Image (cartoon, rainbow, N blue to C red; front, side, top):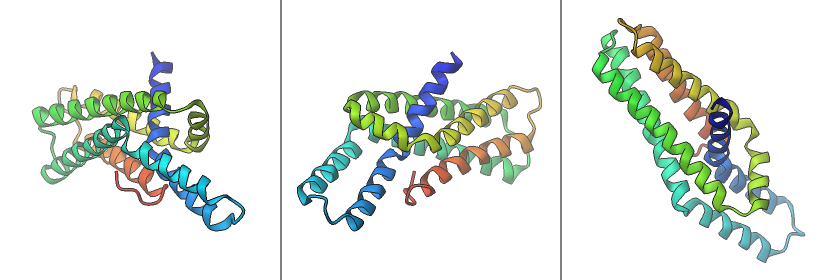
Length: 180
């Protein structure tokens, strides 16, 4: 089960920033490689544009944004009240887990829809994002455990939610300030 989760985490990390990294790499390559045929660059750009519009990619990005929104709401609520409202926290964390799992499923489905050569290229580009995705999953698991406690620690809940938001933000910043 852990290997399946890790595989899904890896795939989601790959999708989340692959579009951004590929676009940035193509722009850099276009600016510095005058021998590259113009029609090939146009073909690559069209492929990237189509990939960003692919329904699974669009849904994965929406679920990632949802995860960040609920993480911020939980963090902000706990920080402002200095306590944990159990019902609020359980609802927020439940939605965060659902969003994370749904995001991973759509990432996996999106990856399956790509040609094998693109999957290989994206896997190489996304290796650095695995740490962020894994950290998000670990913080989410810690949140789930903490909110089940008789008296959840506001400090721990806030810190875990903040960690999730931080990793989502870093994923976007590390690839061209793409808003997630």
